[in-house]
Length: 278
Image 1 (cartoon, rainbow, N blue to C red):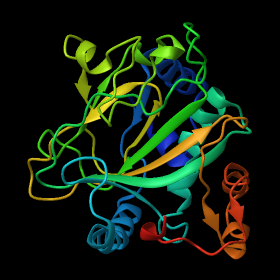
Image 2: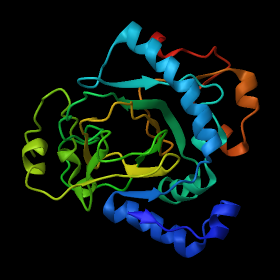
Image 3: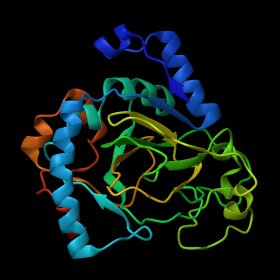
Image 4: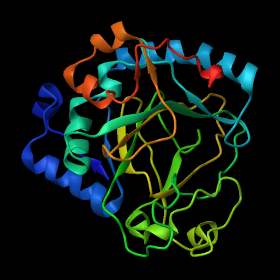
C-alpha cells in the first residue's frame, strides 16, 4: 500500500498523526507499506556508484547465493552505505517506533540483487517460527526495510508479495522454503499458487517496510541491468539475529542519536568487515 505524503511531510520529514496511524495500520493488517521516493536522488546515485564495484568483486569471490543469478550481500558499515537516510530515515523510524517500540534495534545490514537471468524464488517467509507448536498469530516483532537503488519495474525482477494476512497466520506456519523444505503445517509454495499476490513497483529511493513474516518471492530479472535493494532488519529489543554488524568507534560516534540507538547492540569498536569476509 503506497502512502501519499504531503509536500509538508516530504519537506519536514515528519508524518502527520493521521498519516502515521494509517501507515502503521497498513503494516499491521496488510503486511507492508510503501513510502515512494523519500531518499534523494543524489544519495541513491552515490550508493549505486559505491555498490556496483563492491558487488562485482563479491560475485567474483563468492558467487551467487540465493538462486540463479541472485545474491544477498552484507554491506560494510561505512559511507556511503550508512547514510542517515538509509539506516535511520525519520519517516521510516516513526513507523517502526510505533510498531516495535522506540527501543528497537537494527540487526541486519545487507542487500539483495537479482541480476539479468535470475529466476523465480520459492514463495517463502523470511523467518522460522518462534514457537513451532503455537497456532495463534503474534504481534509484529521484526520488520524488513528495503530501499531500491534503481527503479523497480515489471521487467527487472520486482519483489512479489502475498499481503493481506500471510503475516498473521499462526506462528507455526512461518517457514523459509528457499532450500525446498516444506512446512508440515502449511505448504506455502503450493498454497500461494491459488492466492492473490502483487508486485512492488516503485522508483529508486522509495522505502518499503514489511513484516518479516509476510510471504514473498523474488521474480525473474528480464532486463539487461541489475536491480539492487538495500535491506535492513529492525527487531524488538529482545529478539536477536545470530550475527553482528562491525562498526568502528569513530563511525559509531558520528551517527545521529537515533542511529546510535538502533545499532547499540552491534560490535562497536571493531574493524569494518567486507562482504566476502562474512
